[in-house]
Amino acid sequence: SSRLRVSANFAEHAKVRDLVNGKKLPTTAALIVEADASDSIYCASVSSDARFCAVGLEKDLRLWELQSSPSKSYPSKLKGRGSSLLGHSGRVLSAAFSSDSELLLTGGQDGSPRLWKTSQRAGIAVYGLRSRRSKAPVWALDWCATG
Image 1 (cartoon, helix red, strand yellow):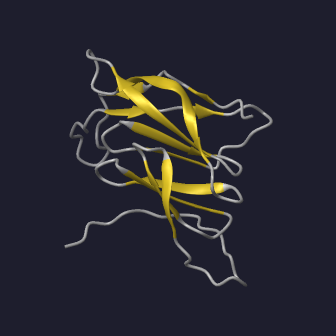
Image 2: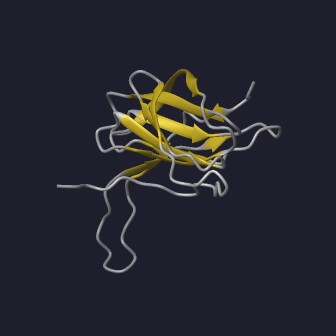
Image 3: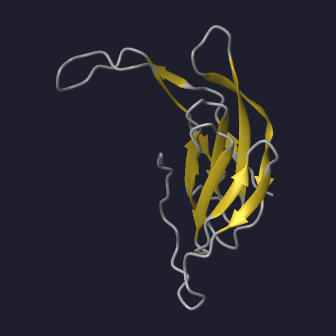
């Protein structure tokens, strides 16, 4: 069992300015993810609408729902202990949410990208991008708009 701690302290950076032209940048928030010395974090991703946070671990993907504060424009609290999404047979190295936060795409050491339905906390597809003899890790992945 992992002793993963995700900080509920979101750091707001509202007065950040572009170094080139001095214009004020949009308000941003940072989520700090920490692990016990016995565990390792390989990736972390927050959905664009700040509803979810996904953290890649050793053979485990953890998904949290984030709770916003009425007085702040960014999440201020995590809901519960997070859900374990099991399926990868190695380290989870990459994670990306769809633009509507309904889907989560992950990749890992096992070389098989996986698609998850966030509302159901369940896997819905496994992609076989690699041949059985060559299972290269999926270090990075992302979504793109089509149509």
